[in-house]
Figure 1 (cartoon, helix red, strand yellow):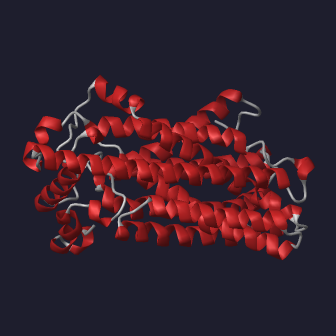
Figure 2 (figure 1 turned 180 degrees about the vertical axis):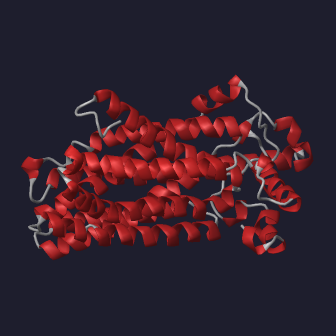
Figure 3 (figure 1 turned 180 degrees about the horizontal axis):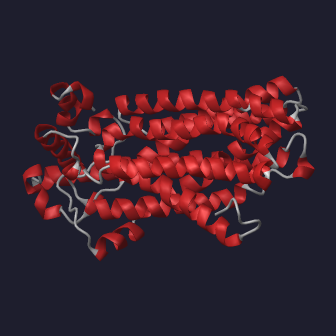
Length: 383
């Protein structure tokens, strides 16, 4: 559609709705329905690493496709949308026949594998309701943690969404040609891809998300400070690599964190959609902070990103403290009132408000059976 629409606002709306409103929250929710929260990080990491890898080579691919300008009477940008769109549609068609909605109807699982996976997911969700009720929507909208995560994701989105869009522009502003700018944008994104995989796998191993978000965001601040403070092009370029190494893993860890924080399928779906939607609003800010008149150093844009990351670090620290206090309160209530897993049905409709539900902040919050289950399951499906 966009290929043949010269300047269509409706085409832009449809493209944005498909890319931003559906794919990221949809895939985050989908993965959270298949894996317990202690094993979600590496899966989200692989998903987001693919996105960073696409950013690494997407610009170079687009630069090459644009050379087709005039072929078939189409502009170069039209060929970009046409070829990339056809590839996306082809893969989507294939996935329609390959993907299964839930483990319950997955044909590729044996009965033993399906029973094991459902048992693990059931243990992880402490028997929370899977049925749709309007009350579960309001649970999400009343939960302060949803708004805390929304603010965190909003301030993450400002640097995260501006980084891949303006990285070639920043490099070009350092004095490199357009072609070299596309080539030089590969290293920061490739670095981010490697660090995203490593950090997300490590976060699963230690059963924590928040500390890695704090550390990654701090590294990103250092990277932006390098770009901001120095006038030497090699040092500024090194700063963009440092930014990618800290910022991109933080985004992936946040997706895994939100996918594992909210209990109950309906509440989790609403919460993820709301949080990612608020994050997309950060993209509006991101599109205006790197202005041509600020070339070649783009100091106002870097300052906005540094400020956003500092607010993010503060909010993330507060979220960790709050969830830790909620965990302690739930543990105390279970001990005081003798609440055990056998009584989970009584709290099935409370979502993550159930006293049996734990927010994963560190390894001791994870039930021991989830830590050891992978040792007794077929290797190709270990957690």
